[in-house]
Image 1: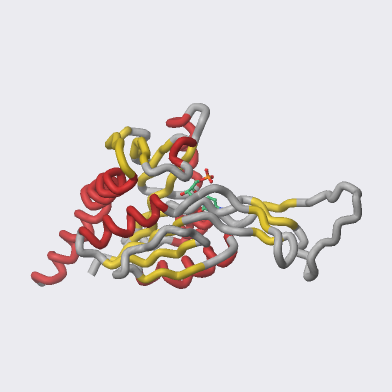
Image 2: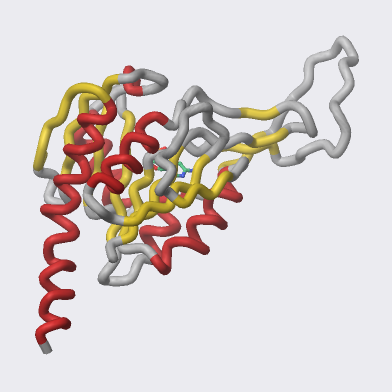
Amino acid sequence: MTRILITSGPTRQFLDPVRYLTNASSGRMGSALAAAVIELGYEVVVVSGPVDVAYPAEAKVVPVLSTEDMLDACIREFPACDGLIGAAAPCDYRPVKCHPQKISKTGSPVQLTLMETPDVVATIGAQKRPDQWVVGFALETQDPRFRAIVKLEKKRCDLIVLNGPEAMNSSTNQVEILDPEGRVVVKLEGTKERVATGILQQIRRSLLAPQRSHDERDQTV
Ligand code: C5P
């Protein structure tokens, strides 16, 4: 049975027990992708940061808070999955130090030193088996196709979904899916549900069809 792992939503990187860095990701794209996976009759595991959206009842949902938690959960879940769709917007930075107690106001400026968090898609991309695949997302405002292809290569993705900043916290999206040769294999526009269905159809055509014929070959031996 085909099983797809999806990362979804934002992450939180705490400065102290009550304050954190985050972003405006709503998890709507991840939720729409999960529904599209179920619609195709596949299994889905969603590793999700804190969101208000609901995921389909049939999905296995693994709730996480930080980018490090998201990576740990993906490392645990990915070996039993055929592929990963990285629809989350994990925080790229975390405070070097998380204060154990709430930081008190002193009237003086506070300086934060931030360090990079791990990249979930890149880490999974580097670990994937030859029979597994990874699809990343790229949100670009400058030289979008070029930057998306650089990202695809760096993160060892098999396809990359390019969208604009208007996708954040919106009910609609406009995307292009690029392959490793830099070709635009499909353009999709509309509600996130409609776009998610199109993304899954493309994944099925490009990445799952060879696996299916492989399974069928195995069964006929
Ligand atoms: O590098 P950038 O954040 O633009 O890349 C976007 C892609 O990388 C998305 O698929 C996102 O889910 C993934 N990503 C990640 N871990 C991070 C940052 C981004 O998996 N720390």
